[in-house]
Image (cartoon, rainbow, N blue to C red; front, side, top):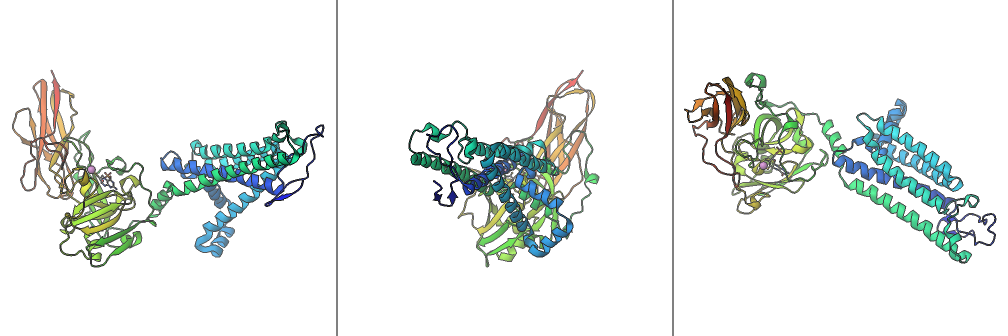
Length: 554
Ligand SMILES: Nc1nc2c(c(=O)[nH]1)N[C@H]1C(S)=C(S)[C@@H](COP(=O)(O)O)O[C@H]1N2
Ligand SMILES: [Mo]
């Protein structure tokens, strides 16, 4: 016995007392045992990392649910200031790499310790492991914003690691012969010592191999899934420029005060969301760049910092989805901060003959926009902020397009990374390939927010109110009709420019008990009255008048 096998030394083998006739089983040596410990830790962390990443991806878990990250951050927290400064001075930008390397080394030593302990006394090894898991668990839950659920990755990872250690010990592949349990594979196999030893060795390496493969595979898979935490961090670090050109709108002064009426500015978290992304793309500002190519004088690629360095413009613009039914809620109004698309395009120099801007999102979604709409002087933006904050990830972080007057599917590319100057004759986009119109200006629309349909109203003064929009044309009036009565002008809120919607309200004196129908219509700045012709959303947006049936109680 005592042969060397590719770095693994078998220990001195002594047959268990009372089984003198049994063939001496193979035992992993010190190196093999240490390897077992390393694999146990790799397995634990790999599995934990994968679960943490998946959990963060679907928004269930927080950033600190990664035991490795939590330990690292706790480590930084307890590092004395002088050592931090030394690290920064010594490693500069790579101080985090130094920390990672330091942690990896510490973990390696711990892993080897556990592996060797598992050989002497599996029970003690499990005890020490439990203690370490407790420490890691404390690091996880003590991170700001962490909750108990964030322990999930660590717990599942620890179960995998501990199971692995127990398997090694139970099969007595690493154990000292004195404490060999009953079910040693070699004692059940009535074969020669050498073949029994071969079987054990094979079992050991198979187990270690499987453990290592699972651990490494889980860990690598975790690295492939872009980390939502990284993106959140990237979003937090942005310092937005002060707009050089701002409308300086006093929203409160514009707003109509009617209970139940949609706010003039939509809170970003309440903003409607429409996209084809199964999970939102995670893109940090460092990863983001925008390539502008096609029919241009010079192809260019700009970084997020390039964009921030350009003159910033802030505008109130109402987005609308082409799928918005009459009376629907797929419209939202926000202050968008960004750079003029025309400025960015000018850097590349669009060539004559081009009439289309094909924009592509990092998730592959494509949009075709009339080149004229982004260069005719309107406030077509590459926006990086919404309502004073960097874009929410769901709304296109780090950069999206916003073009006043066009439905979202032909203008509002989120997570935009590529602009190609081209011709409508040569390209199609995601939705235009599916039968939606390539040209889709937003249609004049108005809707009733209050009263709700089928409301039971007390006779007297009733506030009828809602929203109206005719982006990039502007609104002249909104009118209300009760039953078959005359169209009456509603009161309009203030105007935040022609690209923004407006609120309206109409004080109705409801006298006659019974069922009544309320209708509304908008008139755009050109004097064109919103059509009452009913059309569905396909292929270029719905038309028709919104109405509510209400009952005035006797
Ligand atoms: N990448 C990407 N951008 C996209 C879409 C999409 O599916 N993917 N949908 C578009 C559509 S149809 C609309 S109406 C708007 C909606 O923007 P919002 O989700 O921020 O409200 O985004 C547009 N931009
Ligand atoms: Mo849309």
